[in-house]
Image 1 (cartoon, helix red, strand yellow):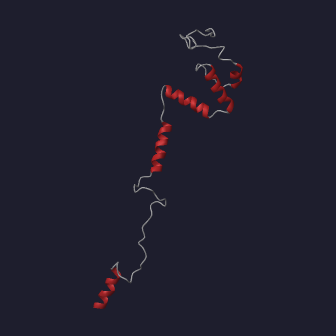
Image 2 (cartoon, helix red, strand yellow; image 1 turned 180 degrees about the vertical axis):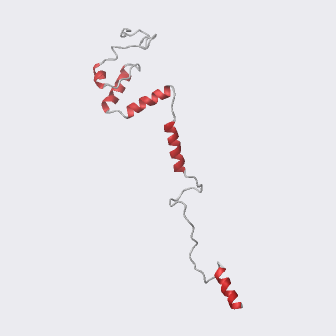
Image 3 (cartoon, one colour; image 1 turned 120 degrees about the vertical axis):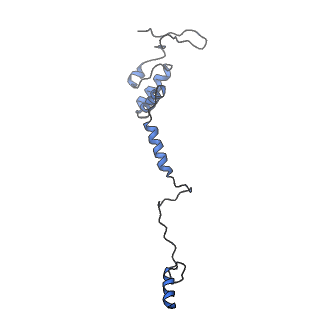
Length: 133
């Protein structure tokens, strides 16, 4: 009876010398090693935040500014040049994307201030402007 008891205990005893000596098999959840002990997928969180930012609808001046940034970013070189020149030479009153028009127009001679305002130099002297239509 003692020999059968020894054979059953050696089969069920995990620390028995007759069992295999390999390391325990731990299943891997992610083949990528992570620098932190947190099990959060920070890449997924980052992707989610970027999608939320893209889907966010700006309002007011922010929406207009974003529209101009998109136009400028997706434009060719002539359109970018036209946008820069028209905005700078007009004092911020004109924004055009047509280079053919902007290259021929002298916005400094044809100044047109917003309604109810007038152009003045740094000394306060009134500058010539294009007449209102």
